[in-house]
Image (cartoon, rainbow, N blue to C red; front, side):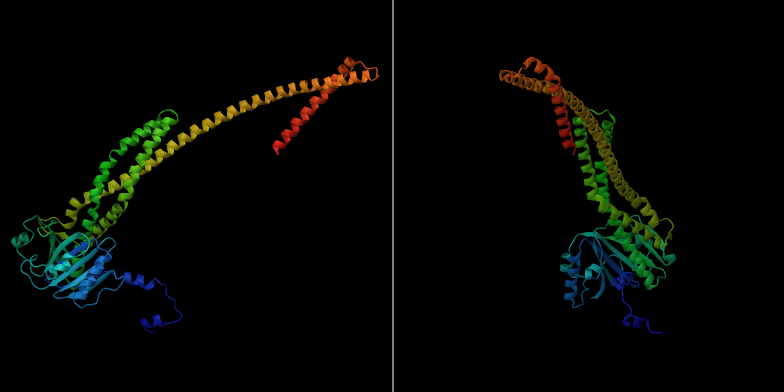
Amino acid sequence: MPPADAIAAMPTLVEHPLRRALADEMHARPFELLRPPLRISHLAVTAGEDGRAHLEALCLRHGLAAPEPGAIHFSVELAGLRLRWERHTEFSSFTLYRFGAFEAPFDGTALDLLPEDWLAGLPGRVVVAAHLALDGVRRSAEDLSAAFAGHSLIGATLAGGAAEAFTDLHLHGDGFSRVLIYDQGLTPGQAGRLTQRLLEIETYRVLTLLALPLARDASARLAGVGPDLAAIMAGLAEPDEGATADRELLARLTALAAQVEQLAAANSFRFSAAKAYGALVWKRVEELRESRIAGMQTFSEALGRRFAPAINTIEHAADRTEALAQHVARAGDLLRTRVDIALEEKNRDLLKSMNRRAALQLRLQETVEGLSVVAISYYLLGLLGYTAKGLKAAGLHLDSDLTVLVGLPVVAGMVALGVRRLRKAIGGDEGH
């Protein structure tokens, strides 16, 4: 049996162009192998390719290889720390690992080892900033409280009892949130996965809540849409008052539809992203496998009390926007139906009027035809009388009056027949 690597050299196999990229996707953004004690600083910034360029400048400064074009994650060892960069759809994250013992978990962070000018020039805006400390020695309750400035703590036993983690979900004086983990038997892989999950919970939690101000604003603006739409529907329920009333309803409905669609277009991406990020938060919390520490809220309980209502507000705003858009669309359909019915009624009345006019024209035409027969017959009989008088003067014994009398039915009949044939001929041409 040939080795696995020999398959790539087999000329008979033609790979799909995406096969290797899809295979590598399963290994994207791997977790680090970590051992305590260490301190981690994590930044999520709204920087795309600018973040990559800034990272390349740092690598160039230290004479290190830069990330390859198209890479979505990169890890490099610097002086005294490890830097991990990840490129996401909306943000880039920079995670710094500072290994070594420490007295106070959040004094002397990993950021302190970065060049100040490079850190100050970091492109984009900071969305998430967190410090995480992984310690192998459990501190006293007083030291734990001091590490979080006396705030009320959230904590749980994680990873099936292999670690304890604590946070307060506050931004401290340096603008960073804090997480402290006590190692109670974590393997390097478990430590890497656990720190990654806790940092992802913090990152995706904040990214989810970016939609909360938009949801509140949308809810406030949509509060006035409901009554306006109800008033328009009430107007549609009233008897048709003519084109002027319909134009007024149409103008109001169009303005309302524009307002709702503007809100939907402005917020749809943020609301959809919040839904996706929120699902990731709950998934990462589930993966913590937490159990209660006496006297403390667990991560899932704290998020359920504080984070879940925010998600509900966002989802309600998104659902309300979509529902009102559908209601406005149905109102537009009803108004369109009402206008169509009114138009059909006007067309029906117009057709009736045209039928009446056609009937009148037909009668008038018949009257004109009768008068035409009389007039033409009169002129023909006059010509016949003059002809008879002329012939009598020429020596023929003709009575002109008798000739006219005898010719009257013949002339009138021939004229009437001729007019009728002419009308049929003209009608036949119009039919063709």
